[in-house]
Amino acid sequence: ARTAAHPSPTMPRRSKGSSPGNRGRKGERGSGSSSSSSRSPGSARRREENGAGSRAPRIALRSGSKKWITCIRHGQSQAQTAIRGERRTSRYLDAPVTGKGLQQAKNLSDRVEKPELVVVSTLTRALQTACLVFKKFKDLKIIATPIVCELGKIPENTPRSIEELKKDYNLQMLPGFDRIDFSNVSAEMKMIGESRSRSSEQACLQFCNWLEKRPERVITLVGHSTFIRKFTGSVAPRIMWIFCVHVHPCVCVCVCVSPFVLVLFEGNVRRVENCAPIETVIDTRGVKLMKF
Image 1 (cartoon, helix red, strand yellow):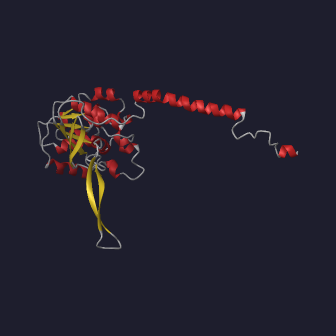
Image 2: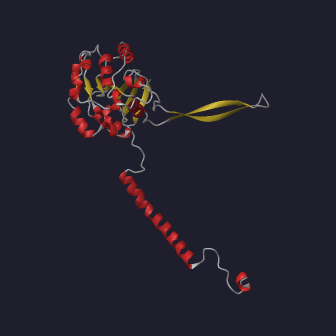
Image 3: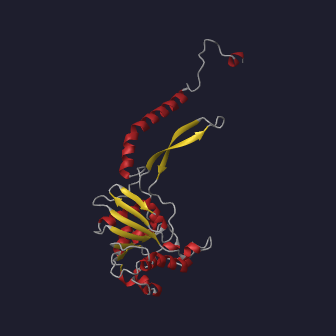
């Protein structure tokens, strides 16, 4: 018992983790870490090939000259005025604009200039807004496309079929609705799949591809808040140095000047108001916010 309690000095004291079992486990851990480190370059290459963990693509034109895009959010919709919790009900399926939204579009029509082309979402509130804003331009070309439909799986973002839209009496009575070109909507719907399941990056890149195929350079987009925010939020930040003057709290005459970096985002509009134009320019470098 005494020997068991106090080992003899000649007996080597076994250190923690030196048992055969521990040595085996330690060796396994060591071999595992080395193998993982040896696998990391290949794993990184595979991640790059698959696009996992890679940087989000820049929203820009791949080629060609720059284009000036004016983004206009639709007039106030009925879903915007819905009671909290009711917005996800079928009552607001492809919700139209309110009376206030109609007036917002009419007020804007007095201030807009004629673009070369108007591209509009196939959702009802955007179609109504486009017809009213550009009603005075009788020969203006207007193209409807699901590519610029709003993002998000809620009823108000669910588009109706072209047949349903053309049978809608309220739309039929709008000035210029009969001039809207719906000819490519069916093919574009098949190309992009279910529009509500797209990511914001996919939607913006699809719009860039659409723009590249158009010969027009001055274009107005009549669309939606989230899509416009994602589209304008793709520019790199601009850094500006500013200097702040600090007065020492104890000695009023002691003044020090410290430099601070102010990061100005030329894009990433946080809030898009109804019928408030946002002017941008897009080229191979990305989207630049001009005026909003």
